[in-house]
Image (cartoon, rainbow, N blue to C red; front, side):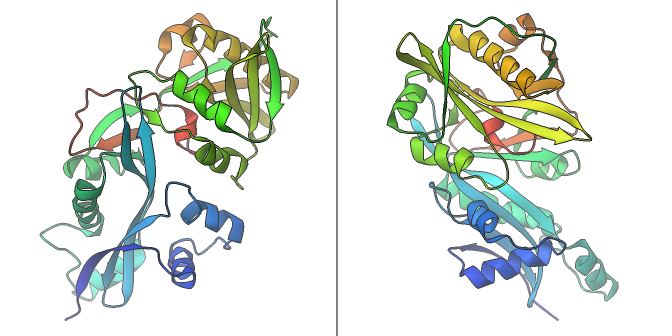
Length: 317
């Protein structure tokens, strides 16, 4: 009889890590730049792997990467779920052979979560995942809370808006942008968008092009906005990935985004937001997908903590 094991792995050798990813992403060639960005070069730390094996057969894995969170009170260390994959075909073959692939009466996925839970209990304050409808019951049964559906708002782009601030495109974040972000923090928890993480997340991201604009009130930096254009079936949608500014200027930065997207022939624009009031005034419509939810776990924080979610949290909207 073989041995079913679940283990934590970090700082894997590059060739081992590549082989592991290839196993689960067989139809995708490994692009070196994307690979390093996905698993290695995050300024907060490289990815952590929870791996399920039967003897030498890899049956599944959960991948998470370190993430630092912050509000106007303190910073929090944490992790964000990156990949959750099980090899269903191999698992079914083992079951047909009469091999028990359960441990403590739980399947591979739930045992992976169990090991993950033990790890984050010791090493992390805030943990987030972005789960589809099929995965949510597994997280819920294993003591993860569902915070919300993806907080998506959409609006058709019909006309240009008048602007009062001046806008300037940038190609790199620096300390002044980090300070601007810190100055605009509230009691809601956000990712700590320091200059290193912001540059990695947006300008270093090999999977998408982001357009970043500073907003100036006279000659003073008032905030910045991160924009992306998504094309599908000959239709363009503008994504407002992140807005950093005082609350009273959010409308201005959204209106600038509207104009930018219109210039680039986008049909509609959307964003994640927890500020429904201002979006309702700007004629955005709530479009929270039922099949996508944000899950949360913490051993030290309660659900009463609120998050300032934006599309910067995830590449899946």
